[in-house]
Image (cartoon, rainbow, N blue to C red; front, side):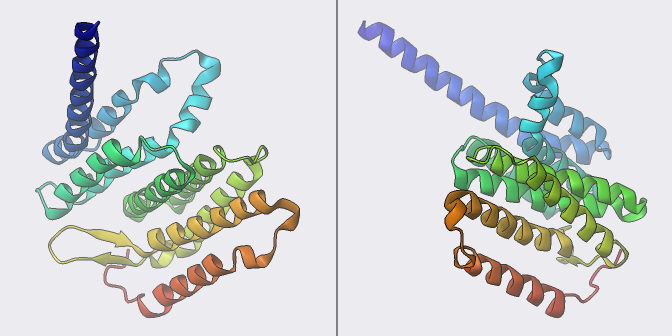
Length: 260
């Protein structure tokens, strides 16, 4: 019996080590292959192949599986897109993206608490909107509108699908619409913060929508929690903080360091 338990523990340890190794390989490989090939196609394929279980189901479960994994897919593809648009040479941003993706795969993605769902959604919003803005700089505005709608929808759904809210479809659609409208309004004057020769580029709208996503979903969660006893005081703190932070960013940090 002791030998069986020891053998089982050894297999579990070996399995965990293989799991960690494969995740690190994906996190590093997705960026590495994108930079070396000077194309996002192979990197995106690698991300999608890693999600093979999502697609290996019956047709009636396929769309549900895709929706449930949208946040993870958005993060992975966004990492690849950001690495591609950083350029064909290895820069600081590429190593940073490798680290972020590895941390996501190993430590953030496996979590399942309400707080973890919020953090995961905010990751997807920040990285997804950053990639969408940078990618859409030379494309029609409709591309950015559609991408931001998908990101807002996926992020809100990821949070509310785990809550007690049984009718969250309208809430997620509204969040997606707000994302797309803000993106449309900001398209003609997109401020991107750059950091020297590191290759790091952060769109202002990515920060704004991340803050909005936090406040919006915090408010919705508060409404679900308190229901008939809901009062403005339950959300006033985060709401004021979000408004002040967005106001500071827009009013004092809108110099066109890099204007698309």
